[in-house]
Length: 227
Image 1 (cartoon, rainbow, N blue to C red):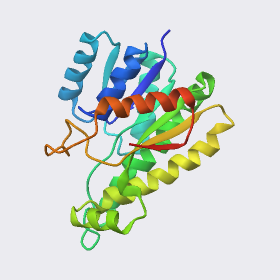
Image 2 (cartoon, rainbow, N blue to C red):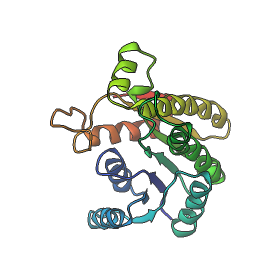
Image 3 (cartoon, helix red, strand yellow):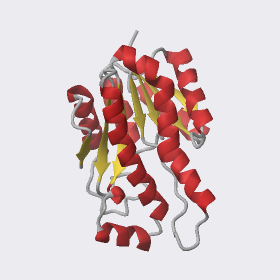
C-alpha cells in the first residue's frame, strides 16, 4: 500500500505542486477544498499525470469537519503519512470594523482546523512516522513594515491567523517529536506565480516551494523554513 498525503486547501499554486511532488514519489493524494467541481477536475488532472488522486470536497472551517475528513480519507485511501495544511480564508481585514465572529472564522481554518486534523490523524502519523507540513506566510512576522502592509491591504485577519499558525507549528513540532512525528512549515514571503495574488510580478515558483516541503519531509528539520 502506498503512503498517503492529505492536501488541505487545494488550489492551482503551492498545494497542487505539493500534490504533484509527493504523487510523483509514489504517494496516494487526497486533495481537499470547498469547490467540488474544481476539485474533481484537479483530481482528474493529477490522475492523468500518473498520480493516484481522489477529491474530498470539504469546508474545513469547523473542527468537526476536519476530523471527519481524516476519517473519510483513511477509509478511502488508507493510513495517513503526511498532512499538508494549505487552507486559509479571508475576512476580518480591518480591525476597526471587523467583528470577532469574522476573526474567529479565519482562525477556525488556519489554527483550529489544523489542530483538529492533526489530532485525528495522529494515530496514523505515529505509526507511519509521518509529518504535518504547513504553508506559512510572511504576514506572521513581527515587523512594523509588514504590519503596515497588512493593514493597508485589508489583510489583518490573515496576518493574525498566520501569526497564530506559526506559533501552533512550533508548539506541535515540540509536542509531537517524541512520537516520531515531524511538524514543519514553509513561510512564503512573496507572491506565488499562477495564484490569485499574482498580478504579473510574482517571483516564487510553486514547484520550488513544493520541493522545499519535500526536503523538510525528508530531513525532518527545521521546524520553519522561508522562501
